[in-house]
Image 1 (cartoon, helix red, strand yellow):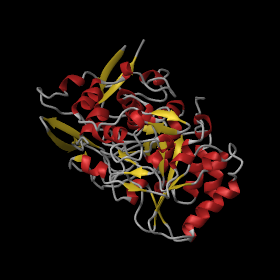
Image 2 (image 1 turned 60 degrees about the vertical axis):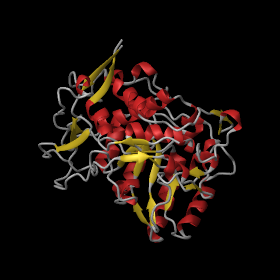
Image 3 (image 1 turned 90 degrees about the horizontal axis):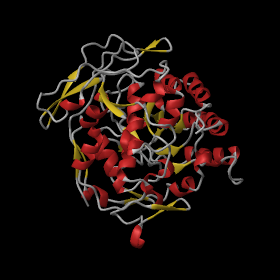
Image 4 (image 1 turned 120 degrees about the vertical axis):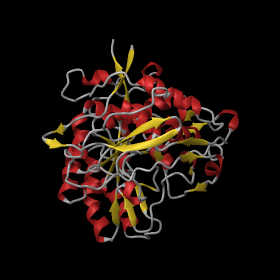
Length: 431
């Protein structure tokens, strides 16, 4: 049975380190459509014996009975593009009636199609540093290296919800060090093969657990596993959850080391170093992983060349001059709550930020500008020959991911909507 509970934020202390001030009270008019969702407050904590009971089973696509009504209602309110659910064929999404994934209506990244809304090419000279698949048994080594090189605050970690469920404090260690936390789905599936409701579960629950463990910060960015995304999935990610889609313009193939003989530590490092010493137009957004000793080791060996070649290394958010989270400018800025009054989205700052990670007094740069995914943007398609989504997709899920637990239409959304969904509502699972 699923009970819906409202809560302001989570985790005052993490390993002795104080997190930013939690969300303040949530205010909404008595006749607001969201008022019925606020029943009680609950703060899941990794130290609780029943922590995992607050979430779906790790490494399995969440079922429809775990989806808060707020999510399904929002899905029902948006206009979806006419794109069917795909089937997988050796890593390639296959669409009904022979439709091509490269068609602008579908726009599958696997077929090297991107939209103008995708965050693909950073500005010249900028390297958006990203790591997929954490947290894993090798994450702490990566975090230590980043810290030693004063680079913790320059990395975006696209994390898997199922992995966070098994290692919540490791995710918090990345946050505490200054890392930027983003979404890499709950169970690392091929997203275009899922139903709309399954897409909701994969994205929504990963956002929820990240928000729970980060003082209420609502993720703003996501990366599709295997690069498997099309306009239907993009519309749900942006229209329901306010997420920006972040593919890549170079695939390091570090994920293939140990599973494909043509990829070794030396060969992968050589490829990366060639990109680092080459043109800085456009910038680099490489696919890298905190997956195992090989992927972490490769990064540790090439990072000095990122610096020596003059790259401006930044998080994904900073690379595109965006806030890190939907309701906070970064890991140390005040988290803002939002009040709902009819169709208007109003923001209210939390009363106190005395428990912030640092003494920063910078206010959140959260915007209330409506974000949209439109037919015009989905048809503004570019082909990226630099990306190699398919080479990544050919890796098996087991090779691509190591779990510490073992395991068309116009869409418009107010910038505050996702905060309503996650800062306020959590599905508490009970038997």
